[in-house]
Image (cartoon, rainbow over the protein chains, first blue to last red):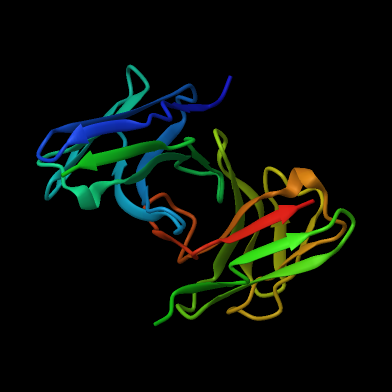
Length: 112
Length: 114
């Protein structure tokens, strides 16, 4: 079983829709939770990170962490065609140096 | 700032050939790493470095070598290429190892081994 599970999609939505992207994980020691956005044939770029449980909002993006359920989400409001990309979740323990575990990524298409 | 740069962008090798993937960063980051990205697998750490002269193995190090002679450069060497090494390779750098330190990725090298 993978430490981090992420539905690969693809997920196709109309412009303006609310998008929900999710990951589940098995290691309760994870404390940092990140979302990366990766455009086609580009490197991943950090979108948001959250420490421990709770919500974090940045413009149209909201990250949620539910440590009791080992479940994290990224919500995109008023989705735009420019949001079309692969979204990777990633997790890290508070200690443990370089060991960041990435999900496989969900491909999102926002249709104009 | 150019950020993290990688060369080449694309490469085709025959089984058994060797090559070096280049990576450079101009952000004066101490920490650098190499990942491979395969469909359905996510990013997996190959090797990493915490400073010039210091490297260590990640999750999937077999078949790869690294060295770090300067802060800026972190090349990845494939010793004897195998079809299983067909992948997209990303180099990354960061200021620290805490979860709050942002990791910056290069644009990737797409490698095909025939």
